[in-house]
Amino acid sequence: MTAKIIDGTALSRQIRSTVAQRAQRLADKGRRPGLAVVLVGDDPASAVYVRNKVKACEEHGLHSVLERYAADLPEAALLERIAALNADPAIHGILVQMPLPRHIDSQKVIAAIHTSKDVDGYSVLSAGELLAGLPGLRPCTPFGCMKLIESTGEAIRGKHAVVIGRSNTVGKPMALMLLQSHATVTVCHSATPDLGLHTRMADILVAAAGRRNTVTADMVKPGAIVIDVGINRDEAGKLCGDVDFEAVREVAGWISPVPGGVGPMTITMLLVNTLDAAESIIPGTTA
Ligand code: NAD
Image 1 (cartoon, rainbow, N blue to C red):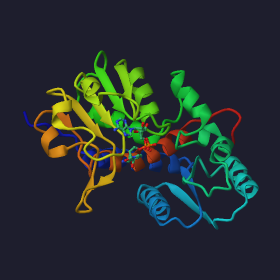
Image 2 (image 1 turned 90 degrees about the vertical axis):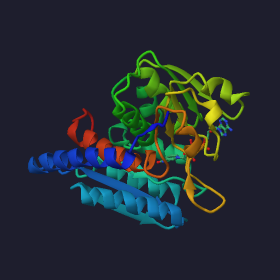
Image 3 (image 1 turned 45 degrees about the horizontal axis):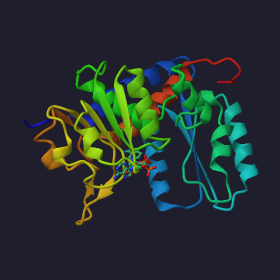
Image 4 (image 1 turned 30 degrees about the horizontal axis):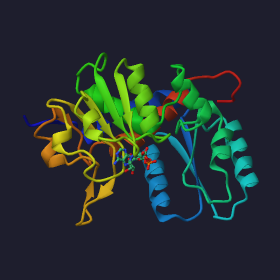
């Protein structure tokens, strides 16, 4: 069997066209959706990430503000800026690019973002909403993975899903979203002995370990849906995921490539979250 490719670039393009339409409809009502991106310090990779996010907003009719601060910005000053953005009616989503300089407590900063504007879905309150099965803003990468899985048209209900990785930003929310979609979920991590024992039982396998070749062909159930979240480099410096793509595609039913799978979906879901935040009027906020 050769797996069908889950094309994240194509799905992303499709979702982004609806984003542009929704943004236009809101703008026509005088409520242009707005995202504030806050960058502290001069980490070159972070600078590229925030530029891409701001560019995506501009291309799809969202208002965006990029606030850049020196690496020595005091924590109190950053918290003041967050408070101002919380109160700004033109801003519906606030994203603070991680990692922050060491003198700033990132948990405190994330907690300062109003839940209704937490478009990264990283706060304890947003995580609690997901855990409790309540509506709320979901972390963009696992949210994008769910869209990729759904795009196959295969049922999730009753399937066995295995997630490799238990980070707060990818693995754990991914497991909760699959659970909410009625999958039976196993979470594997760096202390899991015999990873293959679990992955071979997966109808849906999500790899988010951040290690090349974590998933090889012998670890995959024939016909499974395989979603590769990892971003790694091979010996030649070429971008690759956690899954041995060429070998696994001969076993799986569906597979997302790297690049062109999860990557494009992450920023797309950030745009979707910003629109969702702009469309919902949540009591107690100025949004
Ligand atoms: P992380 O380092 O915080 O977590 C990695 C997790 O994988 C940990 O829970 C660890 O226990 C587990 N793990 C590591 N090696 C393992 C192994 N051999 N077997 C089983 N479990 C193992 O990383 P993260 O932030 O969750 O990101 C994971 C990967 O996804 C990284 O490569 C990251 O770059 C990528 N990522 C991609 C996107 C995207 O938009 N495409 C977004 C976020 C993260």
